[in-house]
Structure formats: C-alpha cells, structure tokens
Amino acid sequence: DSKNVVIGIHAVEGFGHESPILHWGVIQQENQTNWEAPPARIQTYPHTQVKDGCADTPFSAEKTVRLSYPRDLTILKLVFVLNRGREGWLKDREKNFSLRLPKLLREPSAQERAQTSRDPVDRPEHSCSA
Image (cartoon, rainbow, N blue to C red; front, side, top):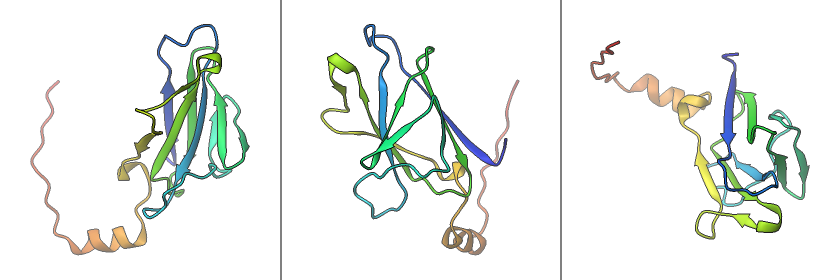
C-alpha cells in the first residue's frame, strides 16, 4: 500500500539457538534526545510488547521483523539494540543503533512543503539502462 511505510529488519546468523528481540523506540522530533515508545499506529509483525518507554519485538522464525506505519506519521529515527538472551545485548560500539529514515519515506512537514515551493527545481538529468 503506497500510503504506508514498510521497514523490514533481518537478523543475520550468529545468534545461537535463541531468536533475538528487537528492543526499540522512535525519535519523532529533531531536538529529541531520548527515544520513546512507538506510537500505536505502528503495526509490527511479529507482535510487539510496549512497556517502560520502549518496545520489544521478537524476530520471526525467519529472523525478520516488519514495521508498517502511515506516511502521515513522522518518524525521524528508529533507535534500537538487539537482545540476544544469554549472549547479552548487541549494540553499536556501546551505543544504540540509530537508523535515520529518509525524508522521502515520510510526508513532508508544512515547513518543508513551503520551502520546496519557494526553491527552484534543480534536477540533474538521469537515465536508466536496462
């Protein structure tokens, strides 16, 4: 559906016998420093448990998590770590992983739309070859 943004996260091998859990939250504003629990409008597969300001989503048998949300919901960043059970947390050098979502995946804000309408269109030529 073109009205939804769909994100798929696939865990590669190396998690032992336990399936990892995606421990995650979102950043919705530029000046926000801490992640927050995802809005209820984000649908996940498998099912997500939300508590204490974050979400825990187990990976499916195929080691995949799928997130889907309407384009009118502004999500600037997806912030996460992986809980590997007895093997501990997988982080990005002791920090959370942070995935900045491209602007093209979300509806532009009123300010962005106003700026775009004032700027001249500068599109480089582009051609694709089969």
